[in-house]
Length: 361
Image (cartoon, rainbow, N blue to C red; front, side):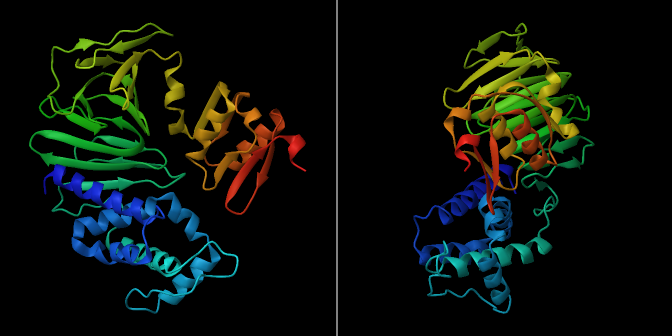
């Protein structure tokens, strides 16, 4: 299968999952999406994988009422639609408990058949996923090593012509690319392509674009519809300086350089980080914050936390934070911040609230 066709199927599956949880569909339409998931092997695998990785499923999986429905549904051979409204006082309505219970059940069963990171299409295309708080190291067929951060999705094709191709669907990954001058290694995201022959770099995809950090070697950033040029100019910036790259231009980024791409403005900005290590600290399991606004710290911690962390008092947003937090101990990190800052951390069943001490009573 052509990787562009696979990407189209992925987009359709993502849209169906988003529609299913949007609240805009009636029960019959949600049921239809679940029943139609078997339209093709590729669609079903991607649909289930996206559903499995979705934060909504993480929350639903801890719901005692939903778990009881999953246990009941275990004995059913096909999807049943309940007419009740759930437990008194619960947040469930209509057929949703049965539909989502069935979805969760399907996920458990189907991932025995389609485990994460396996190839479905004759060995040519592989998909790799990490869930919230999970990190994974993957060795690709060409010998390249990819370290995946929390909440990351990769689509990999090592057999499309002479190009080694990766699509970063979401999240963050560190690429240690095996040198092969005859086969460029390209990562596609947001309409741009990062192309290398052999180097080390970090890519982080955000909602509004992506950030690139080059640790070793050289990479070229170019548009998706044009090949990388050997004559592309080097991106140059001094420490503390940001340089806007001409929209249509290709640029080469050498070790020590970084770039930010904005989807909204379709702009690429080159810069030289004061401390490159901070951009890849996550690989060692530690997040370092030096004079970072508190709201930005919480945004970063939310990438790793199983429970959503919410700042309830806007006056706390701009507190300056100096801290190092272990990725596998977010709760301990919040406790340390509670000792260092004028905040109160309130743990609840499904989320964590941060309030001002004066408002905690």
